[in-house]
Image (cartoon, rainbow, N blue to C red; front, side, top):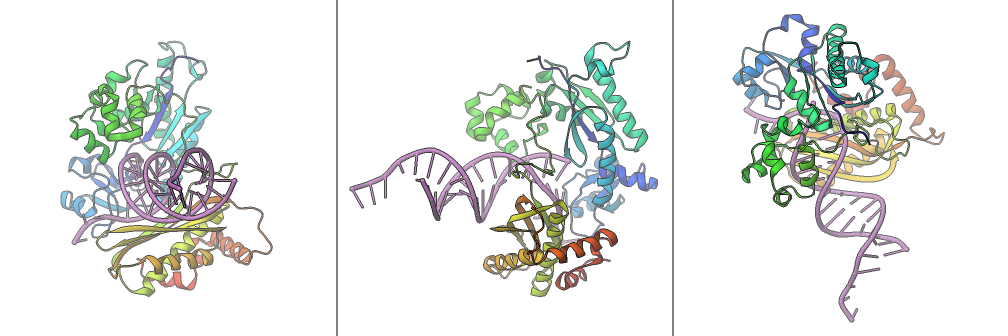
Length: 408
DNA sequence: TCTGGGGTCCTAGGACCC
DNA sequence: TCTGGGGTCCTAGGACCC
């Protein structure tokens, strides 16, 4: 096996949603921009510009708090469909650079440049690492020129180090961590910078006096296991830059199709009401509308679900999920029946409801449409109309009532 | 007027089967 | 007469990521 060389690249779009909004409305350039929702609406910050960050705005923060910190920033609602189109264009460019790549999320992907050194070599390159680094710069330049979006990249011998490096490279930077330099690169960073260490793990590590990745690297394994369990060993290895040298085993965020029919992911939709509701009609209408959405998505993906999960959040934020498994379906009428039943059985409190959600899981590839499937022909017509005229062209009567509660 | 919405992975207990 | 283990499926919850 070849010695690991820094050939894994994590490509990350800088303040992606904000950058797209600026592309569509150049008057936003140079201003603090917050993407999430309009001020006054329920929601959190999904993306913020560097100008807004300078005022203390962070993603995940409630809009109320963001508005308090940055009342003069420009607030725009999230428009996922549009970002998806830009993401696809970036992806297409990047995929032209290497045969092996993986989508991690809407604004992040991994590229494996192993074996591509001679392909990109030009006279004057100071060794194969320099060739790859220069090529990645060319890639980020091309994304800027052709799509208009700024991006950053990290290059390293392992996936997780490349990911940390891409963060350190921002904005508009490319950072290569050479083989053997992983530990010195990671050591001074706060533990939270490492992918997989979130608020809970950070808290546990802090309680042990571990603040930096150096502390994690050098801790006795048994100490780490005491707080992190089975995860301690792979985490410590990853922090030392060991392992993760291939993209092969990692999974993309959106599992489209598995020939074995095993891991097809999940399909979910959830909605927070603009105001907490108790009215049964509004609740039923929302459930119906959610069923329609997830089932439509399932059918367009060619899958059926065996498990349906109802998510329920009360006004006081208490949240529960209740699921049921049955014969696979992608019919909203069948799913709706199950959902109603779950709701009746498990809504124990009379408290007003803040959020409702539905998730389809245990997905199976849909076999040939059965002639005996009652709902098949109806769905073909409904889905066909939607593909021509848009999703909102048709709704079940109950769901249409729900839409009256939404903003125009 | 604190706290969105889309995901993945992991754990743990109970049912059920052999 | 207490009682085994392994495997798989189902359910609920939690951590984490963007």
